[in-house]
Length: 291
Image (cartoon, rainbow, N blue to C red):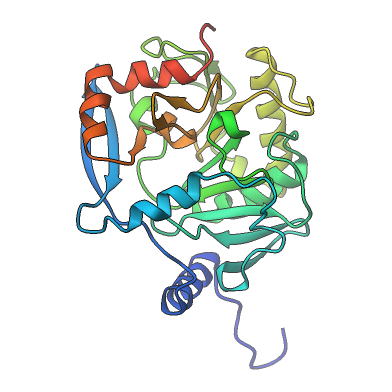
């Protein structure tokens, strides 16, 4: 750094500066939502839906979920939504239609398929964001796992309860221990992470190995190309892997955030449908059954 130069702002500051400019230009178009809580077997789920005061946002939801095979918004990403580089191979990009504040996409610079294996570079990029800032990292492994774009992108949100909707009900776990939560009737695996992991020089390599081990425990090949559908969720404390079967139950789409206790419905009347079936049954319907 030259004398008198200012240090580069941290990631959250850069995100907020990018958000402010993108809101002013109209490049960022948040989806305003209302929220309620649904509790089943002591597990708490946050359910969001498009606000009745902002029904025009329904068109934005349709834009998110309408898959256009010939359109790639990440090649290149909109400069107004691009926060900056994350390592050599990824860019941090704002979600154009966020439901959650500061929702960040970690996008490969060159095209890779969302169904291709997660690489060391991918975990390094995610660790570069999560190491200093915590939050929840997640990945939708293909369309059947809730991915709306075929270009590889990991995702991150900086706040919320992380995986606490489920991990609060786990017995105490030692670092490296892997277990399933008995109340959940779908194939999944929680792995307890070493508390010192994030202070190490290259946490991405460890995360990749933990992920690979979890895949093998659930009968997935972490090097398969294409990978079968799955959701990966990651906090400073836990890794969660959920093999998927399909994207939707009826007309309710589920991505990785569903397995963090956060569900989204397009219309208020779908809340009654969700309450009737129960969030646990809904999540089981779209996940692979069995251990």
